[in-house]
Amino acid sequence: MNTAKTKTTVRTKVSAISESHSRTLLKTRDLIDVADEPEVRGGTNEGFAPTEMAVAAFLACTNVIGHKVAHMHNIDIQSMEIDADAEFNRLGVTLQEEVDVPFPEIALTIRLTTSSSDEELEALKRDLPRFCPVGKVFEQSGTNVITNWVVSRV
Image 1 (cartoon, one colour):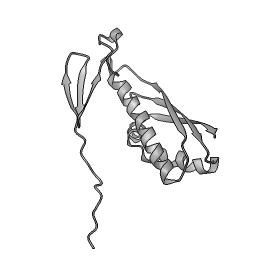
Image 2 (spheres, helix red, strand yellow):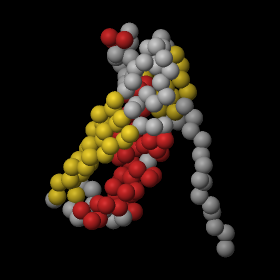
Image 3 (cartoon, rainbow, N blue to C red):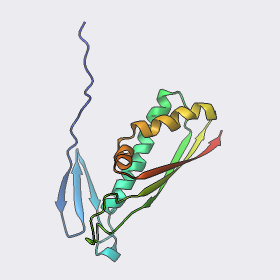
Image 4 (tube, rainbow, N blue to C red):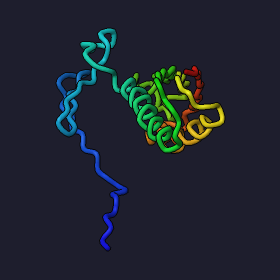
């Protein structure tokens, strides 16, 4: 019997073209996106700033992994909304001094509508930070990640 192995490591390839001092055209797979700075910082405000993209990636990862973990534990998710309030130390990006932990704290608020019990949700609350790779990058860099759950029942 021949069993196929699942790949455990893959490569992610992203390309960037500097369109100006603040605007970056990003390409991955067959997708194109833009990173840009707000006008107040000399940009054209046509995309998320790179630091905003990092926080947005954390929210997107929380969504994807949250749903995977919920599925694994048979937890019902009717809806989920996630907000981040990220403290960002700008001394590094303004070239004033090197900053070891640019995001000292990120507070996530996860609003979940579910029919699952509080006991069932404990598995989601435990496993989500264990498996979200973007969250792990923040936590292992020294960011204090605080997660607030707001649960509504259906």
